[in-house]
Image (cartoon, rainbow, N blue to C red):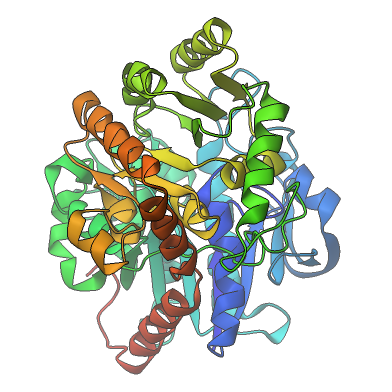
Length: 491
């Protein structure tokens, strides 16, 4: 089976969040299930610098403002690639979505419509003879691919099925109504039953309505999306399409995240020999200027600093952590007021709180390896990956009961601890009091070295790779190809 994936990010070439990790790792796992995958992404400057670009397999004389090509490409550690080389749209430094002013590029609608149109062209025409059996789009940036594919191949029995994966519905890809003709979209579909969303064009809704099957990144999030609390206004269409919606829990790349072989660490360790984790802990304290206290309860955060991630709750609960002898190491960037709040704590208590604003991949590995626990207090979390990194590294997750956090961490209630299956602390309600209670419960368990070691080992043994989830995607692909009917997507 051949699958063409389309996404705006792919690790290790371009990454702003978990989307890149998924797109970078899933094709390799699918290969184990007999699926040949290519990933189409924009040729950002970072991609052009790191990938070896090959021959053109498709060309456009005029793609939303200029000529463009689809090129074969290869890069170490990345899946097999196709890149959309459109300098007028993507040859820009920095963040793939934001300009120097920190705001969205004003032509993002053109940029990611171009990506979707290139995907449809490749899916319909088979670049260099490679004809995909199925098109798999990721998040709003790929949302128009199913619409353009329907235009390229109007007969539903001819065109390949489309799977659309929602990574975070809070980013709906909204643009003014007047962009509909500019993008060559059918005006007849600018309705509540099509891609219209409260008077605007939504790339996300286009993907939800016109794709043959919908997935999201955890079973709990799939259920949550059909409720007003989490659906962000899309709960109606998702309720209508519930038979086509499934949640498949993300995995992580177990080669990239492996404490036995992680080159970023001061010392390696394994489930059979945890001694290196103590050395990593001491090295992290030294690197960040924290007190070299082997008995301190050292927690870490590796996250965007936003309300969605619940970091304002942690700021409120921080006195509880510090009041019980805890330390905090935080790596992230986001809302200025949250950055300032945590920096103030670090300036006030520099031996107890360390803050690094920005993102550093190697430091994130050292933090997760050296900490005792990792905090993920998200108000909503489609899947989350940092808690899985924590499990892999024996760093006990403290997580809110939502989305993929609830699906990937087994709460350390008395029965689960006694049975040896508990892997972390899951708290609810997700408010400052709930987080404070979770921190106190974690501190009590940490004081019981036998119980805490049990949590660490159970987490490290927990399956967090892609094998099972990749098989679920392959089963979905097989089902779509076997049961293809005459119904036009979205009809």
